Length: 547
Image (tube, rainbow, N blue to C red; front, side, top):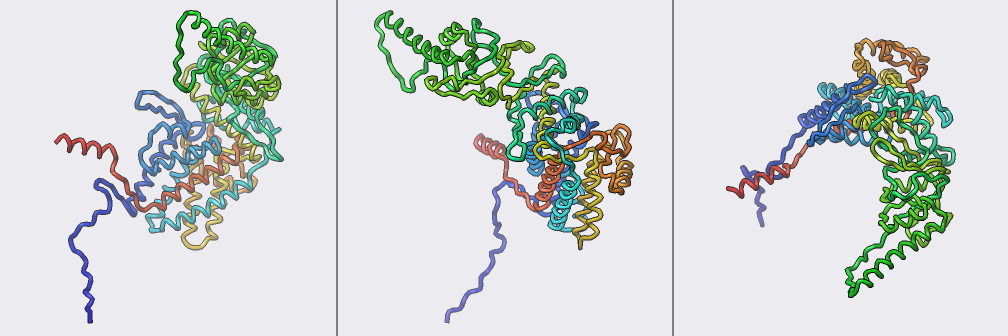
């Protein structure tokens, strides 16, 4: 009978699983490191929060300076290295893409959720229970926001302007906010389309062209397109009224063949004949364009000197090497069709604008296309005293356009100034007492994190955040005070709706969802395995070779 030998475990033999140089942290150590990184980023943005927030100066490796309080820009320029902190950069970009504003709210709230979670971890509450509680709290908070939100329509211009002004309050262009709010509302309402019973706004149809010089109030809305190009030939007209515009995606020049060819020329006459042939080809192309009645030609490709000469003789204004995105905007605004072959160009393919004119803006020449028959693409020509102010004004204007677009598309708005946060916290404290077990502690933690947002507003305005929070809670005890928030000038609790501090529902709702998702994701991580950096490996390899 065969006897089975007992298996023996090898003793003292090291088992290498991870590559040399790999760093690993796990358990509570990994979780705390991730929480600390996220809270550090949130703390940086916290001082920029609200109308009284401060700005950040960011200097890149080349010495270029950016001065801003825009959350997405700060995170983008910071060059964050920690993997958990990088998640905040990603959610800020997601918030920017989805709602266009509220990036600081998202990041600060995520930091507060993790700060509160750390307190629960200290009393041995498992991360899974905290995550479940946060998700339950988010569901309830979403219900609260949707139940208290008020309707707004495309025709409610005054409310839309107030929404834009609220967004611009915390920006560097606050002194021109009334003017910028008017521009934002007019631009968004011009390009908005009704699809069925819903409004749709594509902000790509609003072109922002920056030119420093002048003041912020020199910024203006052009119901058409502005091209940062100049007319190609000095003999061409600089102003064309009742413009019939041909849009081309083909060059007006003799194209080189794709294969290499050799032409044998034995006399000067043959050279002359070759040039004359090329001229005739270009002349025929220009004749075909002129025959359609076009008096403006805009092409994505090049126009050679000979073609420029023939266009000038025909009195046609021409612009070359225009970006594809700008060509598409012109097509949308003027009703033109983009043609890729001149033989296919027909009179019905031409677009119409009341005026095409080259003008000098600052030190540069630009081509203005105004009075388009269907201005579903518009341009905002943004001016400012110096380049960095213009850059910051562009970021502010983008946020204002986004919140107006959100309000029109969703048709729901709420009051700002911490009113929504106070109402959510009140409901969550009441709701948590009805929940079983440790989940209620997580819901209460969520409520405290929400309350940290109005506290941050008050702190940045120089008021006592605890005192403000107590007054805010007291005001929200009465149901009719649902829109009461913090007056940052006085520190008093006032009706923010009557003050005209309004925000789209989407900004608040999306910020809470994104922050809760990233906080939940980080709380579930209990192991961080970081591979050795490639640069270190190269340095070690290089050192070994030298030895």
